[in-house]
Length: 500
Image (cartoon, rainbow, N blue to C red; front, top):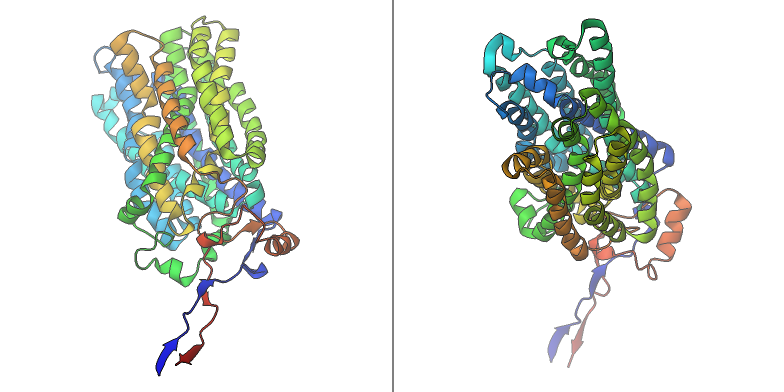
């Protein structure tokens, strides 16, 4: 007689109502607002530095020969992006271990302090060309902190947002970004108008440039207070012990930098391409346009600062609408609109800009803003969804910061250098279009994530009734993939029998 055991069938247990994460709108609004404030602060500094680039050239690099001074100033902007991967490699995995909220508080504090300290630096008149050294150092501190800021903020808002409306809620993060940039530009414009009215045309280079940076002190204090109040994300808190440990070679578990590249290299490449397309256009619109308008078109410093403000405000108002659209038609179609409009509109936009009159500048900037709006409206919902919860912060930090450091944040420097090299004022447009084409290829290879739970997380809804309905219909719901959820493996049958 031979004794045999019946094979044991193993499967994931079914999704239960208690598994579904229910996030009430009141808590969601608190979380989103606290995150948006931080992004506002980050881009407020970018706005200040971008719109003061020509002024800061006279302040910090007046001893530099020829046109080298402007390039040195723009390098100060670029250097903050070159250290962002370091911040991402350190702060990203740290956020996967200790939590999103703690790291976001740290990044906000570093950014606010560094921005304020720039406002008290000595100038080249006092210490010569050595003045760029402390400036570069503080820009590096900002870059390191930002290496964890945007990746953490997008991870945070995407994990807090309900699956059905993630595009809408996550879009508010970049509303804060571009409103912050507009606020920085407005601060520069108002400071220029007031100080020149009081002290004459040299007021900004003499002392006025410091004021916008010092404004970061009260703004930073408010932002830090908000960051102290935001809760941890439900998705992070709901991770199982196995996912927290990240033991073994499980691609859904917590991974370090090497593990992220090993298991998620395709998603990392997709993220790099999409971020590059987004930020070459985005930073051209924001950080480089003031310099381009002054040096290549010939408008005044005040006009360059004022011109983009209404465009950015109007664009920011459209972001939630585009985010809502992506919830209905999907992230991939919206990315397709962004890529197509970039290729179609960029050359005409720069052509209109060359007219140099105020109406032409506004129209040209609006044309550049159209693809930027479609890109950034879905960035915070589409990019974090590429990666599993346990390693999302770290993977986002790597993909985002590598792209922004190499291609996005260096857009002002490379654009100006290409113009200086070729004499062709359309080179920024060609640069942006090239990365749009790469983004289009990446868009075609990515999976659609709209309306679906985040990989490695349970579904997120707004009400208990919605959770009950979701569980009842789980077998028919094509948007649910329980194989990526942290559900226990159970045995269907474990009965042994003898067979003769």
